[in-house]
Length: 616
Image 1: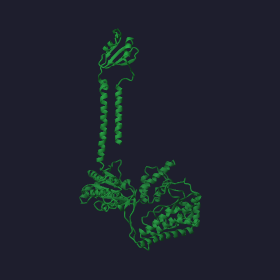
Image 2: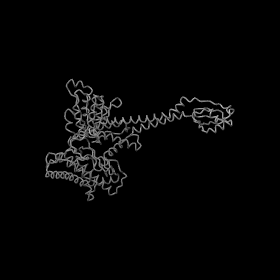
Image 3: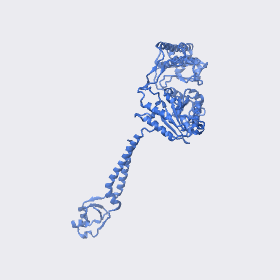
């Protein structure tokens, strides 16, 4: 439709140009009146005519006062016979200059030929554009099954290398070998080594999988074809498999090169797991990918790099040797990596001299590279909103809370009673977290609404950790329950403000029993096996590998872990009631307490073990 509109517009413009050209030759700008023959005879008899020019069937009469008139005569009749028929005396013509103009050249063609030829030409042009549009539509229909991969050919301007990727040292070292395969394949072939067919990048969203794939292409200086898993499958049968064939044919003609399939789990899920049986379009697309990856010659320098954050749902045939030979895991960045990533993303932003990226990195445990980029972007927006010329630490601290919890909602109207309940709730979280040795240090307490939270307590670990003990989980459950328990102690009843805290505490307790094997009574084993079966976006099947009797014991153990956390929290709340009241008083007055002011009230934290950044 867009092409048709474009062709019609071109046709219309050409028509206007030709009409303008035709009008430019049709005569002068002076308007000449057309009169009857009797008027001309009358002016001749009165001696007012200066000259007559015969131009075909038109008589151009010029009067002595320089007025011009046109007179139409009969076709084929001469001027002399016309004058004779009207009995014009010869003496009346003595002072009249009579001449005959030769009707030829542009005037002849424009007045005689163009009126007949121009419509035919315009119709022909219109039909030509229409036929060309239909041919393009047919060619698009025939190319519907062709690959839609985006072709990136790295050059000096848009080349991405490992230097542009901060952190991920182990992943870059693993991929450096792929670069060597692509750049110097001969030395590997001489030793009988086969180039890996595929590399699977595994990692959480935002960890830089696509950036790493492009950096491999930049380091090897080879073409890079990018396609998402969702782009293969369309509503028409066979399109996915056809696009796979087209993509791999394109790669073979551009070898050495890299094929990058992002979100491969869109087409690479286990076959036979869907409700549509084993003959749906997605599975046929996956079958074609498997066949094509087996079809590479040993000497073809083509690497297929795929990325996913759901390796558990991939078909086993994709993961066997000969297809995706390498699996590169990209973890969330640690403290040093986060600082390096922040330095990369802050290069084009004016940062204040006293800004401390190390402090920001310490406060952002658990953030991915994309999260950190978003954090600095939000900080820049906040600085611009406040008409600042540089980004300062306060802007980045505010951006951290905005990314983690949501924007402040100071306009939200709450009653004094609700504000007091929120203050007691958050003070309970902070107090229990401060006195439990395995809980994270408290950095900020606020009763200002952010996102869906009425208030929050920001806890930041002292260092990154990847393994957690049972005691840490119990302390975390105690911190989550603290706000709920304080409400019960102060008001004798609880509110709905602790709903998310209770849900998170229950989930931690369940994982302790069913996933981590930390129950002393049920032993060191896991319970429950989930099988992926998606219908309308929901998981509808979970296999229980335990009896109903064991299910009751699991519920009892979950309740036991929650009770342990509750006992710890209640003991601290009862012992530190005076400190609790002081924290509440400051919160009601200032609405926000930073770490320094908080520790002036309760003293320094006796000890803390790290855990991911959390806000409750």
